[in-house]
Image 1 (cartoon, rainbow, N blue to C red):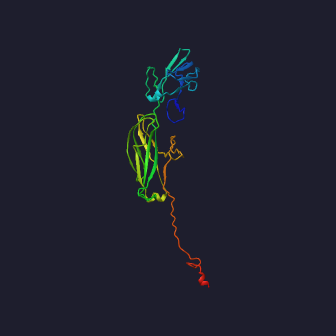
Image 2: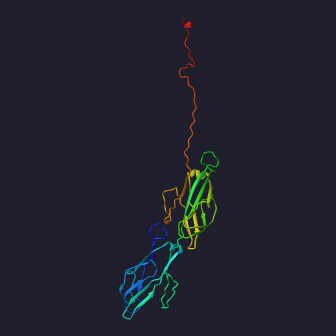
Image 3: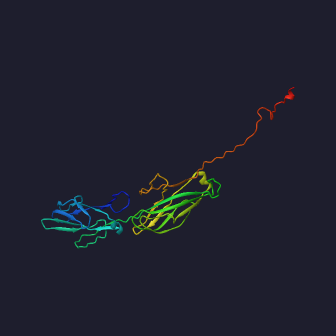
Length: 289
């Protein structure tokens, strides 16, 4: 049994497909013929078969298969459960068996035939979350220059990208000196986000200015009825969309550029008497007579 993500969104949701594999084994001492498999699950499509002949001690796990399209109701319930039945003929009479899930160690023998009949349960619950982290700058001393003592503010947007409710969501950030406040988020519904509960501040140091930038990532963690989940933050303003942990969700580091191109131009003047004459007046006619 496997789940195929039909729409490729990385989430188990309505429209995805469950593929079932049926392994029929002849556990008797006579050959079986005309072996068929039926499954009462509404909507399941059984393909293949019948198996014409199945010799003593042999098995067939390729002839008969099944597919089922997951519904919204299935996702809401968190699982799909079903049991199939195999029937075959022989010279000694018919044989039948209720299916067992070999991955289930319970080994319940509901029909008392000495063979387990564990129901095949497909768990559809998928706790997932996504964390976005953005940075903004405040010129704390108002001098118009990015320098030590100015403040970085961080916003955290937590998104429930799975199909179960998340609880007790926390955010941590390893950047030394960063003050993170808020949380935990008590409950976050499927598809919902929270961009107000958590926030962070950081005071720039001379070392940050010298390095020309500040880079960091946070981590969000949450619980659910189906288990825990976590995510490394992504900067939604960074289009690189690097997926370092391979979870299908980008994990771009939040980088804030502290470099600041600035210049000042001063202009002064001095006077030069190029002809050596500070004042010139024309002679009067009387002076020329």
